[in-house]
Structure formats: C-alpha cells, structure tokens
Image (cartoon, one colour):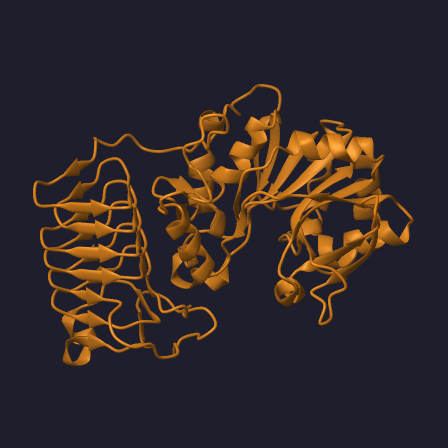
Length: 418
C-alpha cells in the first residue's frame, strides 16, 4: 500500500494564519506542524511510500518535508515525493478537487503498481495505525474502506455521513445532509483497492472539480462495489477553524491531555531547526504550558502553548494562548486567548484579548470564538489595547490604533488583501 497525502488546501477559515502558508504547514503544539501527524502515522504504520500533493503556498511545506529525513522517508525506493501541479504538453492545469489531484498523479501511483492506495488529508490531528485499517479492508473483501467516527447527531449535518448494516458494510451515504440518517461521519481517510480507484478516476476524469465525497464514492457505490466502514474511536480533530485550532492546542496542556504528544510507542516526528535549551528566569511563572526549545521566559505563562525561540519579557502575562516560533513579546504585556503566528514583535505594555466580544467586521464566520489572531511577521506597537474577535496582519504603528485601541471586531491588514 502507498499513501497519497492531500496537502494543497488554503485553509481560508484560519484567516491570517494561512495568508502566506498552506494549512498543513501551520505550526501546532509548539514545535510541530499539522502535516507532521499524518506523516508520522504513515511511518509508524509501516508505510514507506508517500506522495504529498501540494498546491497553495507550497514553499514552507516543501522546505519542511524536504527529503523526508525526520520521518525516515529518505529512501532510494519509495520514500516521500512532493507532487505539485505541473504543466503538460497540451495545457497547464491546477488541481481542481481532491480526486482530480489524484487523477493527475495516476502515473506516479502506477509506477509503484500498488495493490492498495491510502488517501489522507494533511490537516487533521490524530494518531491512527493504518495497518489495522488495511487488515480490516482485506478481511471484509472491500473495494473501498472509509474511516468513520461517531459524532453528536446535531453535528452530523456538517460531515459526509455513512449508513451501515450490522456487518459494517455501507448501505447509504449522505454528503452534509440536512436530516442525517446516522451519526457515523467520514474522516476523509480512505483505503481503495487500486484497480477500483483507477477505474473511477478515469471514468470521471472530465468531471469539473472532481471530489472524493461528491463524485468518486457515489460512483464506486453505484457500480455495486463493496464499501465498508472502519470505525475509529481515538482522538481526531479537524483544525480547520481558528476555534478548533485554538481548542486543540489548549487540550495539549490539560493535566491529563486527551491527545498525548509524548507517547513513546507512537512518536510524532518533525523537522526542526536546532535551538538552544529553554531558559526560565528567576521571576518567571509557568503553569500548565508547553514551552519549546530556545525560549526565554521572564514573565508569566499560564495554560498556553509557546513555540520554539519565543521571548517573553519581564512582567508580561500570557494566558490561554498559542504563540508561534521566534515571536518576541516585550515587558508588561497582557495576552489572553490569542493566536500569534511566527516572527511577530509585540510591544511593551500592550493588552491583547481583553474586554467584551463584538462580531468581526472582516469576517464574522472566521474571526470569532473570542480570539485575537495575529498573522506572521506582524508588529504591534507598545501601549496599545486590542479587543476580541480581531485580526491583525503586517507591521502596524501607533497611528493605526485610534486612541491607542483596536476595538473588538475590528481589523488591520497591511501588505495585501485577504
């Protein structure tokens, strides 16, 4: 079995966090990136051939994966291969859907002549042994196995829903139904017998924006193939919104974390620069937090996730926040329920995330959850106050804050429109 990892998504619901980086390359849990989790699952499951399909803002993702050394995927035969869209003799075509991306790389898959193909998304946080799923696929004589997990019935309309018989065979499916018949939600993880998937991809090659959920699965089902559900009961999170991303990070610092980053039997691997050890100053306070390598902490960090190389000045208080790599935070600042991306500079005595909530004027569906979101390479001047449900991107100055304040729901975007 080989794996095809779909990592080309923009992740527009993460707002300024993904303006210049693909969602799978967004930092998570201090030193990791989101794509580390499915890649680590592959190597822990014994899969040594992985194609990573990239498209949107691929530079950092390509650099992070490299030749796959941290995941033991630097191999002469197999290993990891980056698969961007490419120009063909008759046209130049972007990937227009999840299945279209696989179709455009059909020759790559054929070159390995696999019996089975595992389709993965690059933007989920979970640990899964794909070998167990393959064993299930073989035991059931399946043509397609879909990983599913139970969700609350009231949330089922947000997912592709599978209806199964007592043997676990899929008898019906609904794509984001208004009235779901089941609460078994597709996780977007599929094992296909390759000849079955290959036939479906070729049959639907002219389908605009060809997608697995909308086109391939219905096609295979209508052909009378054997579709089977594989129920997963572990931790799985789609970090596709700022709220779910923040929540997943906060769950890492619970006293007994639901998702354990430190499990020796199932390690999560990453490609990280070499940093000096962390340093905690004599007046610093750290409670229930992840502090990554290379940090200097002189203030208070409470229930937060701090990326590598972050500096926190004396007198600063950080609560319930995610601070990404190489960000510098001055003295006497207060930061609550914020997501601050990489390489930002936060001035002295700045107050972030305080006060009441108001709906975002930029995009109330994206910038909600009471969070402050600051994009990478942003500069926040000293002595300003930033309210909830706000978004900031770029080098801001005191003049950008009337009366020294960015009110709840407001935004400042510099250096490009979203």
